[in-house]
Length: 316
Ligand code: NAD
Image (cartoon, rainbow, N blue to C red; front, top):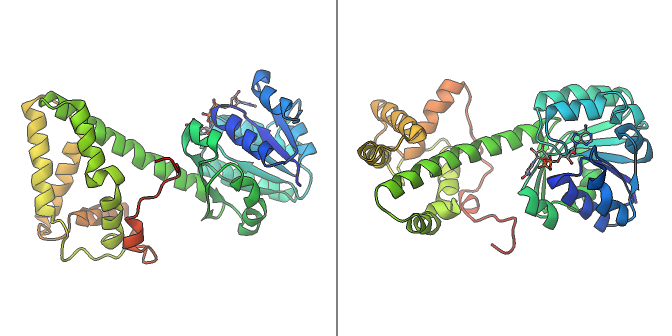
């Protein structure tokens, strides 16, 4: 079995490295906080004195660090991974970091005959501990195939995203959408409570409605945006414009600031003024595509399958 190095044994790295060790790989570890390595050392791992030393002792070296600054210094800085790695070695960054940075780092490793993958993860500390993580990977396909068993030891949804940096781009898109949705939920819950409904009841409504499983949203996007077909509507833009208008009216009545909802309303109004009231409400995607100068079509996505609930947590 390959010897695996792991640098950055924090909330995520602690769980992921423990799962790699549980899968039987001999390990060499390093963290600025020495105490973070304790559980792994008890499991038989060796402690290194620097990232360079980790890489010099291992076939594959992984990092799970706070962000781009740490990734840059640990990978290519003094006593970094690049310095110690032997030709043929593989460096995998699991951090959520800047796609451009890993694209700059990769040629430096290639010059030395080494390989790089970016493989950010999603699923939180509990997912890292239980092995329920999505792992989105960028880099050479052949290297991905070679290290997949290691990635499978700590992730249950490991997938290839494309060339180097693709994993990081996918992860940033995923989180950006998540933050936007969270703000929308924050606006909705504050509106609901201020308008006199218990938070528990609102939560029930969110969970029991189609929003709870996001299935309607996923199915709708796959059926319309990904195909470019917005007619006939399953739910017309004029109806969604009415709904969002009723919500922003209620927000004004109860003095609840709702920046996302008001922005969404403005976009719906633009769509109405294009004469799209009778088309599917997701037709407003076309406005975003026009402004961004890009089309988002994905004919390989099956709408029925897209609507099925995907879980990384078997208990859900
Ligand atoms: P963390 O702060 O708990 O862990 C980072 C670890 O790196 C710490 O143990 C720290 O001591 C170590 N470290 C920092 N600089 C170092 C250096 N120069 N050399 C060696 N070790 C160093 O952070 P985390 O929550 O485990 O997150 C790690 C990465 O995973 C981040 O990029 C984060 O965005 C991403 N992520 C986190 C979560 C989450 O829910 N926590 C979920 C998905 C992705």
